[in-house]
Image (tube, rainbow, N blue to C red; front, top):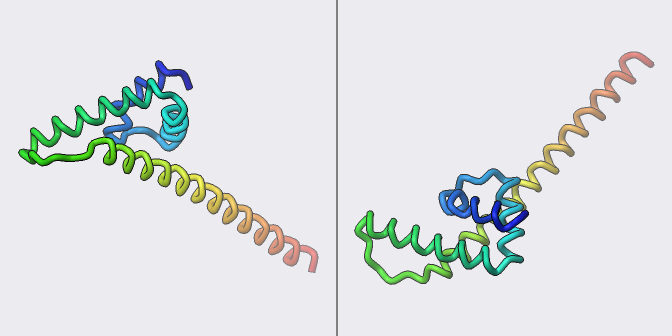
Length: 109
């Protein structure tokens, strides 16, 4: 992914509107690109600060820690999504094997 694409995704990341595919690519890019990570950090901080102003919550927050927590949660979500796809594929393969065995015993015996 190029920086231009990653920077276009920053807003959608903060609003949690990326697909799993986009999220995986975005996370990989920002973990390796300091410029894009800085842009994400700035946008995230601004977004959260404006959100707090809108809700009337005026507390001191560690925005960087909040972003790190969200990045960690996003990475976990990508891993869980990938695991669910693998389990789905294993389940489908198991069903196919059972169907083939059923057909074998039905027609051969």
